[in-house]
Length: 391
Image 1 (cartoon, rainbow, N blue to C red):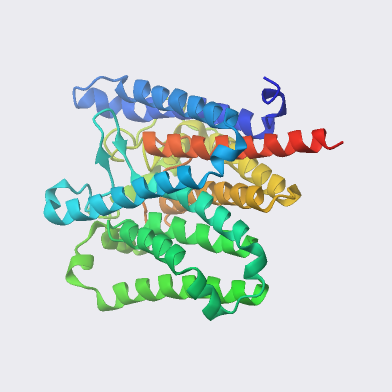
Image 2 (cartoon, helix red, strand yellow):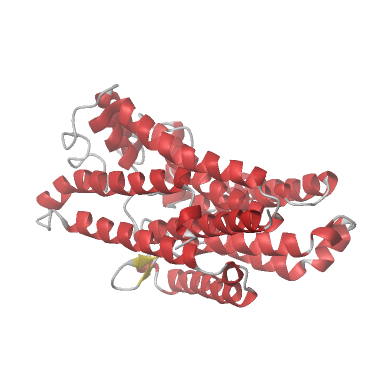
């Protein structure tokens, strides 16, 4: 119980408040569609509440684990194998059975009680794996050349690169982008010399950018007819494509406009009534904007940003390289997801299907984000304990 006293309330309190808001808003956003389609109107409410409770339980269990378990190569290898194998399974399944794809993507494995998304687990694996590798080699990295670094890390580069490529091939551009950003941030925050950091970050950026340019320039038939390409066109011309791919963005604009500053009231959204498909997932912030207004949006995003800034601050204060990298990684994961979600519903970037942390409906995202917070809280509490013990 001594460990509980060291828990960071600046992270825990916003987390619990967001879980509550998420459960309420998922119910509000899904109620009408469930009613129209003859389903159980409380189905999503119950599931989201269960996801929130399971996430909270996982966060607590991970927080109470011994720090050595989190840094165990065996545990990380096990998670890495599950991630790599699950993604490979999805790629094969997508080619063998194209009908199994959802909106053109093969990103979920049906576990009966919920749909598991390997991408979510890949985010945590990336954070822990990069933190471990960059910390264990921090002294050698200072003296390596680019060629030496490549030769010394070929296996690691293959592992990380293959996961990003498999996610992109689902296709899930948003997910691949999040993983690439995690690589860039953690490499930049490590002990790698500035010159090497710039070279490695540039290689990642150039590779991703070149791949996207080639896709949009060559326009291979498979890509042009994909759901992802239509989303890119919708971002550029939402109102011209209002009857087609632009419908979601346009209705998101209407929801935000309807809400104004104070909103139309909880449960009174118009756009969730068949205009925004599945408003409890990617577009839940649009429903929050319509029902609770700008004030509701500011509260939700403010709570998310409070957690992110707290993790960054803890990372800056930490004297432990591994812990700092994990703090930065989890903060980056949350920040990138938030930017992609908000940017998509505002039409600044193509829709990526990325969830809003702790608010959007979904079990995989909730569990993995909670797992990430549990790891952060664990490492921070361990550092506090060691600091008190050394006095």
